[in-house]
Image 1 (cartoon, rainbow, N blue to C red):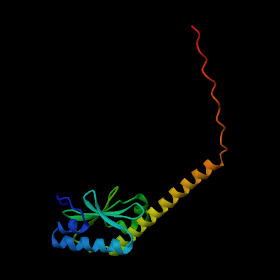
Image 2 (image 1 turned 45 degrees about the vertical axis):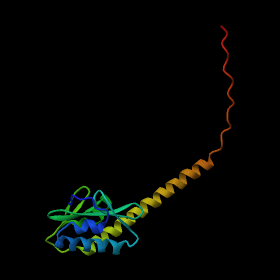
Image 3 (image 1 turned 135 degrees about the vertical axis):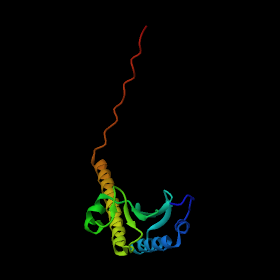
Length: 153
């Protein structure tokens, strides 16, 4: 990974040798095509995309490039397609010596977008349910406090 503090994905990609840049540009184009409304930025000093929350990140290393986060839902849904790649708790590693799996990456990104939308909908539903539950509870009348008894000494 580059030691410089990049502020754009263009700058990040430019820190790598030309063959790696070509791969990263292909990954970037795949992400943009899969979720055109995703916001591109740099986060944790790597390329990052947001779409209703954290969508996907990619980073380049000496022998591979990786996608993050590899959620359990994502790993379960694509278990068979991910079998040829090294998958850790939070990352999917793709070796440089193989063609960029454009279809797989596109599908992974779309799946992550769907995960984010589902999580957002669930959060909104829970918030609405909590608000509705609060409205249904009768308002308690305030209890008047009796003045404290004065001590007589």
